[in-house]
Length: 163
Image (cartoon, rainbow, N blue to C red; front, side, top):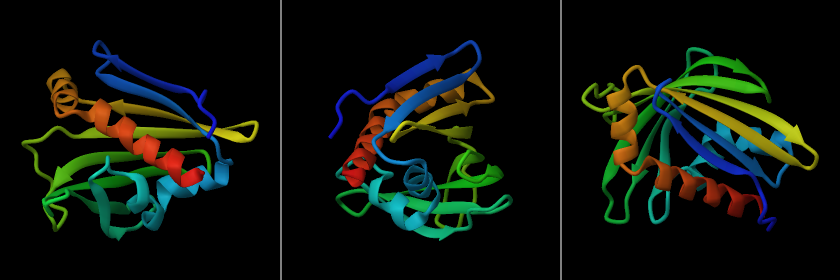
């Protein structure tokens, strides 16, 4: 596996955003599929020993992804991503939130807006992720829940999948 792949994680509290730049040793079409198809997302999205399990996915504007992060003891944490903009193999935007098993948003947890931009770079693909929060306390709560470590572990799972 190529070990010098780009990985930047920047927290900008002033703008209430997290910026992640991540490079994968795979062509654009494979990386796009890994982020937009539930059967592939379920293979890498959660940090080990957790795994993701999709209940429903409609990757279209106005559609959403409803999934659980399932722990080693069977515990479930539900979330959904509501897609508001999609340009195939280029970018998509989604509103992300914790919810219950039926997809009802839990407003006691922070929500965010993700904009993911995909760029072919030689034989690799770079994904530029911007995660925006309405409130600084929501960004800070996300970080306190271990988001940076967990998301980084998930991205490493995707590296393994591309091998």
